[in-house]
Image (cartoon, rainbow, N blue to C red; front, top):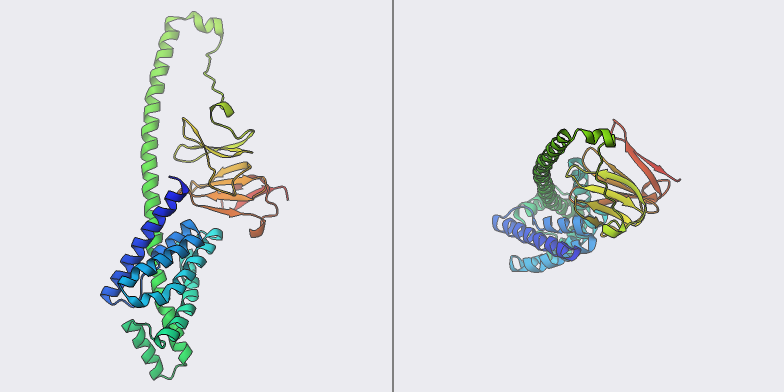
Length: 339
């Protein structure tokens, strides 16, 4: 699937999540809008621009559910942009502990904007029964006006975003586990087929050797089949610098021409990652994630679902040229650089 088809699919799924969530929240009178799940999903996998586009389109579509949703477009776009920018530096869906801090940060951003929108467009009210009841209660205890509107907007935003983050987190991990089991099953079938083929070949060879006892005496050894991979049969990257294998059986080859993936029959250049060009070193960790050290662009972490994160001098590396990668028993990673 090319990059544009993947982005269109992400936006389509995200719009369904946003519209369905908004319909459920509106129909059931929930103290939230539930219209940011798809926005965060688009921003996480497609970047801030795709997150903003999803927010705009979903707000327009949700006007059929509630005409007042038009006023929240600025807050939703802000969430999409911030979620996309943060995802380039921090893959917060990789660990459960990170989604809580990310939720709090997103809620603060949306809460500030939402309180301003509610104040200017609706006199401070949110249109949600429970939230407006809290505003009235805080007014009865003489809480400051700005505090009433902000704390209510923050509560709505946190409820919205926590529900969205949990749905995405569990969805991603269910998908990854399903993918792992599927690849393991396919690999098991491939290995079984190769094992049976190998046994048949070995049986045939030993039968021939047994029938011709003079063979070993004459040659002194058994010959192996040699096959050379280079630019003529798919490996066009030039000098080979490193090789690694992931649990799905894929062979990864680091070259100065880029990162190649070999599936047993053909080489595929991973050309959709701008940070992975001249690759010098590879490392597969215990989570089956591939680390690729480059000559001048730092190190890129490639996850199982083909999402990635780049570490370079802007994030603490002493040099963008990474020669080797390793990990100790305590889970600490070591990068050998030229700096």
